[in-house]
Image (tube, rainbow over all chains, first blue to last red; front, side, top):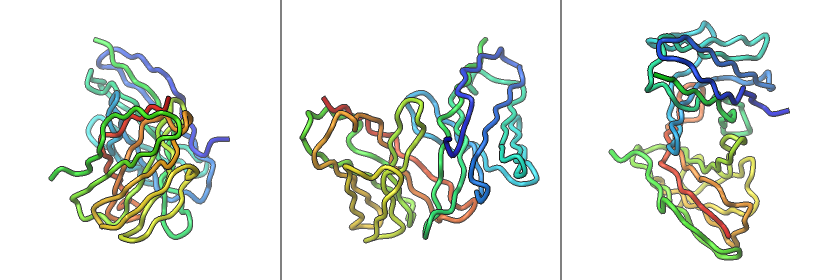
Length: 112
Length: 115
């Protein structure tokens, strides 16, 4: 079983739609959580951190469910510019330096 | 600020050749990382460094070596390239390694093909 699992998609949605991605993680000791965004043939960039109480940044809402070990990302009022791959990332303490474990990503295409 | 830069951007090698990928960051970050990204696999950590002069193995270190002689630079070496090392390589750096200070900033990537 992968440490971080995501539905690879692709998700094809019309502009203005609401879309949600889920991600599950296997290590219950995981301590911090993130969503990164990766545009085609570009590097990943941090979209938002995910806090225990849930957090919102404009059209984006992230939720964490520790009991069920999953993280979600909700995008409201989708824009063409939201088309990208969204990476679920988990911080698993590993020895003396904490490392990030990346999911393989969920591909989103927003259609005009 | 340039952030994280990588050279070269593209490279084609023959099996058995060697090469070094260079990563540089100008953010005074202590932590630096090398990842490889393959289709359907996500990013996998090759090696990382928690400060100048230190290195440590990640998830997939075999066939690679690294050095961190200067704080701002992190080198990834392939001594004898194999086709299985065909991948996109990303370097990243971060200020710290705890909690939400662990945001990693990535370079633009190096696309390596081994024939």
